[in-house]
Image (tube, rainbow over all chains, first blue to last red; front, side, top):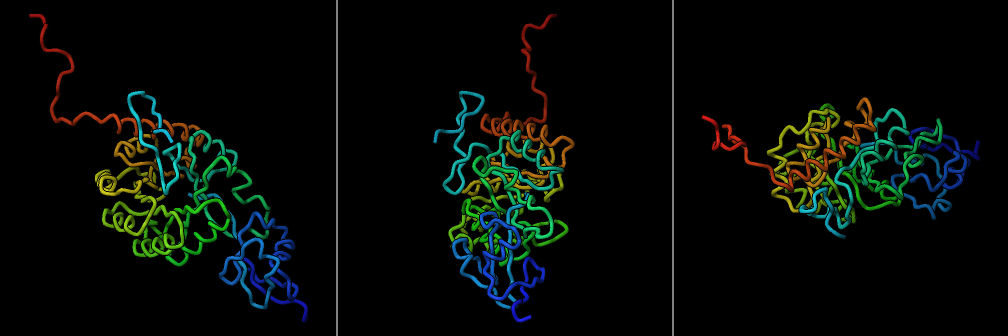
Amino acid sequence: MNDTIDITVNGQRRAVSRGVTLLELLGSLELDPRAVVVEHNRTIVRRPALGDVRMAPGDAVELVHFVGGG
Amino acid sequence: MNPMATAVDTLRDTPFTIGGRTFHSRLMVGTGKYRDNDTMVRAIEASGAEIVTVAVRRVDLDRTRATGILYHLDPKHHFLLANTAGCATAEDAVRYARLAREAGFNEFVKLEVIGDQETLLPDVQGLLQATKILVQDGFRVLAYTNEDLVTALRLEDAGCAAVMPLASPIGSGLGLLNPYSVRTIKRRLHVPVVVDAGVGTASDACVTMEQGVDGILMNTALAAAHDPVAMAHAMRLAVEAGRTAYLAGRMPRREVAVPSSPLEGMLD
């Protein structure tokens, strides 16, 4: 159990490997880093830094993109 | 850039410029609520709009990858104007605006801070607060507001690139309820005034443009029309007609008849 931690992604709880990076998280979700904007604990993480930010227990990640709107 | 051409050679319109950027169409359209993406794309094309609005939302992790609007809309051919729709506080609106900017298209944002969920009327205090933060942060803010002159003046003072008074509530299709207020706002502000929300059909768009405002943003009028593509075409013509009529200068209203044919030369 020690090698997984719980984080929140888009409001849903998810178990991920301890120390996984945001870039790896996007990969596991089959998301193209160029097609989403990433917020980690309320701070925007730019694309080049996605591989540097590692997940800690309880972290909150938001993955957003543009949808239709007025 | 040359002045915008109109259908009539004698009329020369001023360029439609917001936040230092000039656009070729005074009609802006939203991308929400279409029955399908193909209809949306064809309606936008028929509208001739350059600026199209988009919303920022969570990626749907459980379903298909195709919910993103950029799978259907080419950002090279359209100017993407992100909105902060759904935000009820200045803090949320600032957060959404920053996320939108990070997508990397431009520094423009259509700022909405909603104060009441039934009417979707703006929270003007939150709007001003968010405007100040975003302007400080380098954004070009287009603020959705009501038709209140004093709020519009405060928004201009706060550094908005454009002020966007409503014609009537969002999605209502009631048309321009208060042309006098909107005209006053246009007369008093220096930044562009773009009417946002409430236009229902082509005549509404035409009457709105006849007030002299710089542009119109609409979404539901197209998306909820029986034939969105045909309505988009009608709106394109209406915006051009209204703008041209404004530039032409309408005749004065009179309460009595004035004959158009000569009184002389009538038979005994």
